[in-house]
Amino acid sequence: MPVVLENLGKRFGDGAPVLDDVNATIAKGEFVALLGASGCGKSTLLNIMAGLEHPTSGALEVPSDGAAFMFQDSALFPWLTARGNIELALQLADKSSTKASRRARATELLELVHLGGAGDKRPHELSGGMRQRVALARSLAQDRQLLLMDEPFAALDAITRDLLHDELERIWKETGRTIVFVTHNVREAVRLGQRVLLLSSRPGRVVAEWDVTEEHRTDAGRAGELTGVITRRLREEIRRHAK
Image (tube, rainbow, N blue to C red; front, top):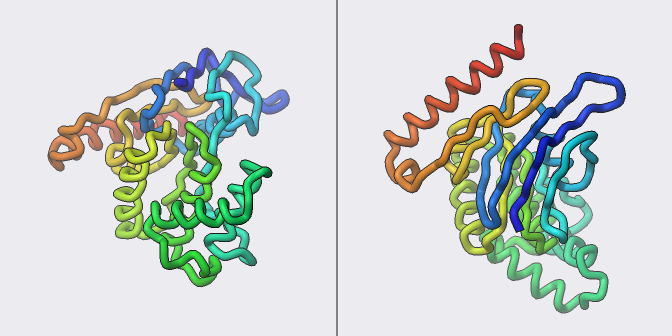
């Protein structure tokens, strides 16, 4: 099932609208990167798609089983092991599951994110990149078609972030998830997304979009050109917001 946003709007109380007339369709299995200036409503839009907030106008369609959410912070329970954090997500997703089945599935997910040997480690024993891999495995444990990611790699160093880009792309292709990925990093958006959507400064609405082709993925020059085009358009929105 696609994700469909129609004339979506959101305001909090009597304040100015955060989102206004947002229109977008995201196909099943598509990877869409969402860009915009700080405060333009990207996270609010993700919260609405996740069912954590309700729109004040317009309508949306999301898969009937809802969405899994991955935040910027891994938010792992420090008293649980990596495997225990994933097993808890599996238990919450299916209360009828057995301990043995949850352990087996958690082990599979740890292998999927290349952490097969780290299942018994607690969060403080893992690097930042490893904790984010556990958080990704925990999100996948919810077994939802739609995965929402709110700047999950923003706090990581450049090398670790690049490695996780490769891992996320591999996992997306293997699982067929629909992914909406919020980022401030234009290079990251072009690296990961099949399509990049730009939200205007407040109120946020989709004002531009770009297709990212296979040629952009394989040709650094073409990727750089597209990154430049998107960056210039993003700067226009930031300047408009500053006026």
